[in-house]
Structures are given as C-alpha cells and as structure tokens.
Image 1: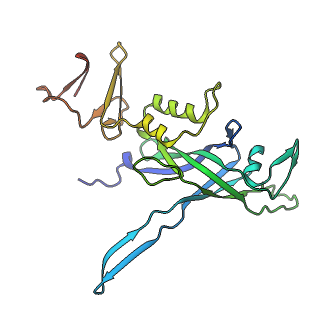
Image 2 (image 1 turned 180 degrees about the horizontal axis):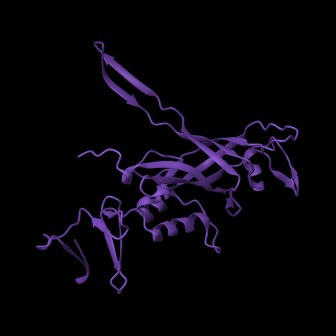
Image 3 (image 1 turned 180 degrees about the vertical axis):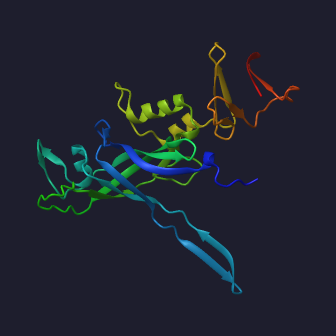
Length: 271
C-alpha cells in the first residue's frame, strides 16, 4: 500500500564538505576552500525508431561523468593539476600541462523525521583532469567578497566488473554500521600513520558486499552486532529494534521467532 508524506521516508540532499584531493606522489590534501561541485554527465545519445508511423523502439545510451568545481581557495600542490605548478619555493608558472588527480567529497542527506544530519554520502571521483576558468580581480571596496574560482572537470572511467566503467562512485552510509563507515573513512582519510588513498572500486565492493549473508556477533553481555545488506537488515526508528528479512532458516517457533546460531551455538533469537 502506498503512503504519502511519511516523515520517515522524506529524505533530501544538501550540503558539501570534507573535500580531499589525491595527487600522485604526495599525501592526500584536505580541500577546505571547496564550496560547490556541480555533478553532470555528458548527454547519452537517444534513439527513437519508427515503423509504420509508430514508435517501436526508444533507447538512451549512458553518458560519461564530468563536473564543475567551485572554490574560494585550493591547496598549493593542486596548482600543478590546473597547469600552474610551483617551479621553486613561491614561484608558480601559469599555462602548463595539467596533472591528473583523484577527488573525494561528502554530501549530506536529511530526513523529515531525524533532521539535517540523518546521514551522508561519500563521492569518489577517479582520474580527473581540470582546467581553471577566468578569475576576475577587482579593487577592494566595502563588499569584500572572496574570488570564487571554477574548475571544469573531465574524467577517465574505471571498471567495476559487471558494470559499465564509471569515474564517479557513491557510498551511501545511511544503511551501514558505524564500524564499516569508520573502516572506509580510514582508507580514504588515513589513520595518522598510513596516509589515505582512493581505493579501487573492486576493493570497495569486496569490503561492502554482504550478498545475502547476515552476520550476528555476540559481545557476551546480552548485546549483539548485526550486519548485512540494506535489504536484509533494517534498523527501525527507535534505533534499538532490528528487522531481519530473507532469513534462510527453518520454520519459526510458535511465537514467530527465529533462532540464529553459529556453529551450533545459539547467539540470538529474533522476533
């Protein structure tokens, strides 16, 4: 049954933060001046075929990711990625060949029931090349607006088996456990000892793919961690009730509960 205007499913996207640029040969750099990323795709070719005056086939080909970044400042080493490398300390040379880079940033997901900070998505952009737009310089007046720079981005896609190559991958953290989110963010941002990196999409897939598995871990004090795919493990609104679906188990007990065991040792009973 369809229900409209349920606040628990009234989601919205907003915000941009946690920009990181990955330049070959140096550690990842936080991009604190990043203000916007306009995501786009080159338009895919559309086809409409007629027979006897009637459309019998319509199709749209997939496009390729591109975008435009906006910033009020950029990390100095990024100058080499827009054709303005540093030749020696403090001396930058314009109009050079840009270097490739990778990029990640975070966008927020709000909920009608839980507010603006309900969740977020991590965006990973691979094999970028950038060109900087014109920069307007004006005399100082009462309105001290910083100059906003724009960068047009094109990308070379990378392959994830089973899918068309893409340069843009999105990690939606709303249905993920805090431990799994922390593991992914440690890879992206580093841990204070090992610098961060943008992993191959297949590495992310293997890390995040639960398939149909549901993993229940007992802490020995009556509490449990339950991990699985969004389709199979659902955290309810009270943040305490977990609903499991598609369980491969014997018929439920008289009270409708399932006993989930590991190696014959009972770990949890789910109603």
